[in-house]
Amino acid sequence: METVRGNPGTAGVVGRYAPSPTGAMHLGNARTALLAWLHARAPGGRHLLRFEDLDTGRVRPWAYDLIRRDLEWLGLDWDAESVQSRQLDRYREAAARLDTYPCTCTRREVLAAVQDSAGAPHGAEPVYPGTCRDPAARHPERPAALRWRVPDARVCARDRLSGQTLCQDLRADVGDLVLRRNDGVYAYHLAVVVDDAAAGVTDVLRGADLWTATPRQVALQAALGVPTPRYLHVPLMTDYRGERLAKRGGAPPVSALREAGESAAGVRAQLARSLGWAVPDEVEAADLLPLWRAALEGTPVRLAGG
Ligand code: GLU
Image (cartoon, rainbow, N blue to C red; front, side):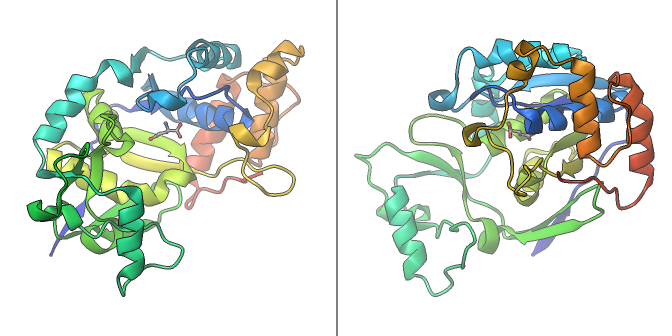
């Protein structure tokens, strides 16, 4: 079994914020956006905005402009913008370079096969047992998803903020990944890897919910022969009950604060304080750059989750 490791480049920093336009930005999204901006701008790097809108059923057409306006209002500028739904050729080409097979298993069949197998994980995501690796098991009359036959390898990802390394056995812990769903939608893991590479992204700062998905993205980078960026996973903002803020959970949208007459400087201060930073009641985005630089110098970096 080979071990694949990330190998970040040392060129100038290129960062990005990659929202899914599925609704209004709430304060938690804004905090991740602020940190991604600070991380790219602190060393004088480029910062990109990418709309991750492949899952068209969940996209809200009004969300693109609202997110742009919220970011502008917060003073978080970007150098270039891209939209995933306009890059489908890229994902098709990348998928064609990987060892894949059509999969006609339904979600129910996958779950049943996982539950029947002795090694069913408890609480972990179900690992596809590879049923359709055998062409005889496929149903040609059904629409097919496209799965990547993952290599027999152990893959490790490193987080620059926590200093943690997470290793996963691709076959046992991840399973053959869906690259394109049976309704034709390309998978997030493929798109994110292809787009970060195409844009020359060196540093991926994003929510901690994506940390456990990072090794499979590193594996895709290795298989596609593209560099692995540095990863920085930041805590998700929680409410007073310690629960993660969510679009569906009634977290206040940034646009509602703006429309209610709150100042952007005040909202930035609120976000900074939620990270444990001592700031005045009103701050400019640029005022936070030294605080981010100082945070990065501490290892491991401590950021409050609240
Ligand atoms: N689009 C993802 C989200 O909104 C972020 C993906 C990423 O940063 O890699 O949660």
